[in-house]
Length: 393
Ligand SMILES: Cc1cc2nc3c(=O)[nH]c(=O)nc-3n(C[C@H](O)[C@H](O)[C@H](O)COP(=O)(O)OP(=O)(O)OC[C@H]3O[C@@H](n4cnc5c(N)ncnc54)[C@H](O)[C@@H]3O)c2cc1C
Image (cartoon, rainbow, N blue to C red; front, side, top):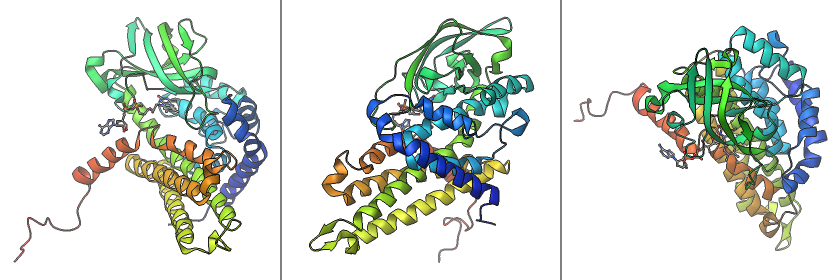
């Protein structure tokens, strides 16, 4: 077991931190206020090869593993969770192709993402369902070797600016998860309508839209997973992207903790800086230990994916734990700032709003707990003999 980053990983982390401080931090508040899409920052990230982190070398990418991606994501998110979500969304959109695409699809689409600053989004959710992926209604009707999509997708990150969307749709809603397929949708195709940005509580610089699909013809070469194979592909994708949500949450919490330390050491109350009070010291200690634990769980989930191990459980644990840490730490940060924490004067107010999303997207905290409790109660092997099978005399 080795907790030390390699030399390349240390360099990559430093590169991402430098980028985050130079390009993201100065515009974080501006984009949050205007709710504009940070396209210039995304293009800059593409130029500096910090977009499309998951694309293998064979298709022109840097060949980073998931742990490498998590290092980058933590730094980006520490400067602005919303812009980080916008930057990382290409990983989410491209991951089903990386996992399930054929050679031609990988060379064509992944190659295009590397050669041009193009965006690819990911769409399972619909206006009437998010958690219950198997309950989707968007239809995929077979027509020869092609498919025709009809329906609506909702909450699609980067959707308003996407060149491609990996869309999950069902051949038959009655078949639930067995009916779902995955399709690469070129957003210029006739019948695709990208909605306007939907205003949000936090992460306001990430673009969120509805997507309408009306008789959208999908050519044979853009069928990624035939109906029956899409649900598993979606779940495999989440296992590879949820550790990154853990890393987002760690970055967000880390900044909230750092700003809390800055403030506690400066702000005076009752003749001393508030950092002198043990109640405040306890808050800082809890922040520090929880962030450290969240980071380790995130690294473990990412490492397992990089080793080709089944990381379904570890990614659920990392996402659920780190999301709660981000929410708790940002809440305590606002508290340490007192009245100023409630104003837009300092960044903790924004981080508090931004943190909430981690408990919702890519599977809510409740859904992660369902995954964890199912494993704990059905698959986990007990070390002790059952309490009901022991001689209790
Ligand atoms: C800003 C933003 C960006 C997003 N980006 C994308 C994207 O790019 N692509 C995409 O496809 N989706 C995206 N989503 C959608 C997101 O994944 C869903 O919102 C999320 O999965 C929850 O689904 P829902 O909103 O329909 O809530 P519901 O599924 O309706 O759940 C409502 C509440 O009930 C709880 N609940 C549901 N089922 C159970 C259960 N069995 N047991 C206990 N509790 C349960 C949930 O945890 C939640 O608290 C995004 C959402 C947001 C807000």
